[in-house]
Length: 280
Ligand code: SAM
Image (tube, rainbow, N blue to C red; front, side, top):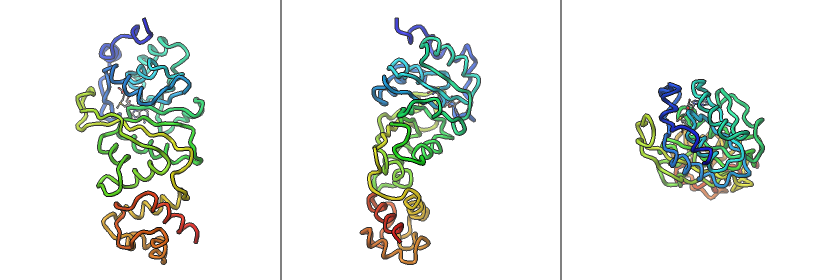
């Protein structure tokens, strides 16, 4: 019998520990262990990898990660009510699950993990995008993590993988795709969760590239992209006017028409523009 079989069903765990879902903590639980194992498999072979899981809740995805062979899981959970359920899982997988009660936005999880580690989470929606942006903007690249396997609202997932020319294309797509390969691995209907959220969800898998796809200074690129998409309907010569009095020259160097709009400009050209602006 494998360790996962010695643990009670998640519905029973939730009842026994009175884990009624709290909206304020973004609690929409996954109770189907086949599904959580599938999500864990999206992260790839974890047998030589530590995993950071944010918001394990009653531990459905935690069980999936451990059953799929993760070397070690560090789970950070804000809701103290979930800790006894996590302790039961830790007992079934001796030495492989460590959990911390705390806010993932504040805990220094990296101190507990051997890099390059994987990050895997059914994220609380209220903090998901903020955590993603932090993970994508470390001080040095490559980062301490090698991949991110993250559940988002489908609309947010689509913004991460969006291509130029689509409505979803913007800062999140450029930030993610500059230094990562990003794809949607799974889409899930509201009914996959207990309680069901209002909208569909999707699992995004991001793999860190060894170096950015195109050369650019991170801060300059961020400034260009922010200015371009803050006024996404404006022509770029107007939207970017504040960045340089010679903005039309810089656009020309980057091969971008001054009348172009941000949502049609590919990453490569934004990087060329950032390089031209940084060279002044
Ligand atoms: N991973 C579990 C699952 O798949 O069933 C629960 C997912 S639920 C969408 C989000 C979880 O994140 C909840 O357990 C919630 O308590 C926890 N959470 C919310 N905000 C958090 C934060 N700032 N730091 C850590 N955990 C948080």
